Image (tube, rainbow, N blue to C red; front, side):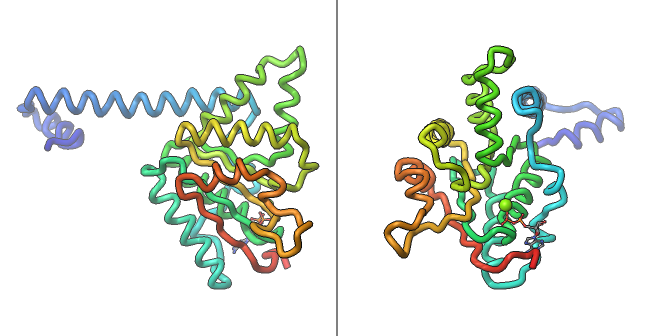
Length: 241
Ligand SMILES: Nc1ncnc2c1ncn2[C@@H]1O[C@H](COP(=O)(O)OP(=O)(O)O)[C@@H](O)[C@H]1O
Ligand SMILES: [Mg+2]
């Protein structure tokens, strides 16, 4: 099979003997690449217009799997998961993840590391706190807003990877639960993965403890578990200590 580089090399030497099939295939491959680039640019443009940003916050732009220190076996497991997730993302059919653990444990670091690397590979990603998401959604209700609520939610669903940060930190209102349900639901239907970062535990030791299930509802958690979504435990002390 002839490659584009090979064609360029032969063209430079003045020999042009390619089959019609080769040329057709190369043309199709080139168009597919262009389409993908165009799709990503269009999405990022829409995202910029809708949220005034996409990707990760500047504070997490240097986060990489490689600069995540492996201080315990747990750190290693979490970093291995992040590496596996990145390397297999092209096969991803909607497999999400939940990083659960104490503040400062490195959940944002690894989530940003995943997004930073995927964005270089051409995927569109967003890490956003539930608080920021709700604020920006409320801004759409204003008459002066250029972006409708519908457009906002569609852009949310369009990201190749959406990571919701500080899940469960909020007031836990019905409106919030409804919006999160809608986003996760629509993303799952389109095989788009969603990640979540939370300080809440997965299960409760005492019946009245808040868990991610009790805060978000069983339905959304069921969606998160669909397609093999993983719970990664960050149960160690804050890195900042
Ligand atoms: N194992 C680690 N190696 C290197 N830096 C880390 C590690 N864990 C956390 N950090 C850094 O510590 C700070 C707090 O981590 P962060 O990811 O924000 O924690 P969390 O989201 O779990 O609250 C960040 O600047 C992060 O880059
Ligand atoms: Mg955090």
